[in-house]
Image (tube, rainbow, N blue to C red; front, side):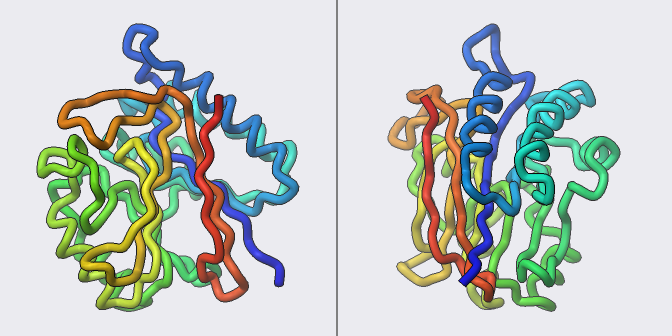
Length: 243
């Protein structure tokens, strides 16, 4: 069986150094240098918050660093979905077809750009799900209930995360791959029912899930490696931190 190997990174926040508190560019370079050591890499998916202030210069810096992957994996696909710190129009202008939105038959996956979580999914995005009933969804925001005392609040969550999780379950979605919470988590959507939600660690910094305030308790960057079988079902997932 020839598994597809996908790297996922999230919450890069280029431009979000906050007076030297974080090293977003340096962290991204560290992760890229780890990824090029892999014996195989078919795809990289970035699940939102590429930059901090959604300006053109930050998108350029981000993509220049990621371009190194093409030197080692010439056939790699690099795909982006936007998060709350992104501007979908600017992403589309700067990154072109690499900005993924909609259904991929090849991957049996739906990619969702949601830059304003208070609006939830658009009607078109819901149709991607109801029409194609994909196995996998890539988006910035977790759905269902994920234990994080600071991020899992109405202020930071997507609209109606429990209802959205049930909507996915009803339409056959098996796994959701996301970021946003700046932590690592793998768990069931709701009430122990599959499918599952997988939160990728952040490039910028990790946040303490047990703190009710914004507590960057681990400044190491992280990434996830996903392996899919020939039916596009998730076979294995591992999360890694880089010192």
